[in-house]
Image (cartoon, rainbow, N blue to C red):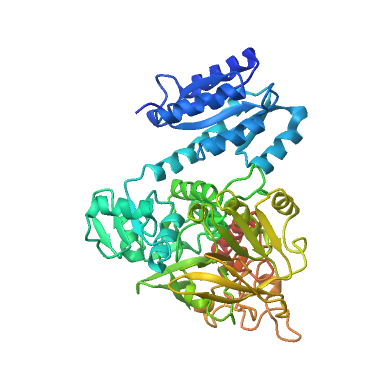
Length: 561
């Protein structure tokens, strides 16, 4: 199979030649590792580039990346890269622009959803770090397209949705065939004949067929570690979102035997985000998938033991150790614990008929992969915060129309301005304010929604196949019982926020002569970081920061023991 293509586009022969030279020296030399070899091609105009893209696609040669100058006669770089996305959706697109045109590049990132922009003149030593990252992401996506693991199932099946979500959260390459579509039925019949097995059906790379597999069977197939290897650790981190991943990386890199547990998969809610655009150091943004992949690789580099899916069901304190009981019945001991479970999507309550469509048209949260299943449809998104805005923009790339249902008068009180601006620029996103879901109808899946104002006025029914709900979140901390103090909503109290009896400077029952540290709970040596902590800032960057700071307190605690 021919190597994937890197295409450089610039009307200036000198600049074009320099780009090609640098790319070939890095990606097209004989000593380049096989998994990083690309064929470097060039075009002198937008029209020539599109013609070349078409010819490459006809001969089925993958196009990994197109890097284009902005200022070209006839067709500018942003317009070209927009057309490239239509022709080759998985190709990474990079704009090359003069420093004076940075505003154009930023508009291109926002409007055309470009992956990256670079300024001229470039330093070759600095050029390849971001390109390497983009190409690594492209290779991961290509593995999904070429994956030999196959999943067959009706899109509206709850079981099938749970398997798709589990595979997506664990970044497992697979190809999905929707048996509710003619193409999916044809693919399944070609594989098994006219007598279909029980669905969903998973066909492994080795050809093993699993009928209606559960999550544990899927975890075994993916070779995930679901049981802790040791009985005792220096540090156990509960929750593998941004805060938990950061704590585990910092802890293990500084010599602590570290166990990281998550009930679902590494990444948390942030791992499902289609695009995080305000994370420092990534001007073109990055997906939650990219962030999680990098963080997990970093954790494994420092020998963090990652056990997932594995829920923690209880915690107790025995002398100086914290004992965590796991869902499989096993227990592990820890000298110190960081609680970083994040939060779970809150469900809509009190709406007739809605619960029975969960997983069959009604979904809480939305992974990037789900957008592709909604091609050319109308998608409804409930919520007005950043997560809902990011999901709406992602769905808008595939859906015919996205309708955002917002309870308040506008988005400004709950959503970042950059997201509001991006939503306004999309012709196929409609924002309905003062609007709630008050009813749902359907048969084996969702067929229609009843919408009304918060007071119930102006009720009307609309056809709807998919409703994605992102109306806020709540912590999953009931398993802590009375061991750790929590506020009425379940968020964990730490440091100065811990409740204290009248006239006392320390929490009731606090056994140490010192005050609790900033991120420490009412149990010495048990810390909380990220969204699960009472009073935390609900942002990825702040969760990462708290995860790092928590380890400094862990070291102080262990030194004091």
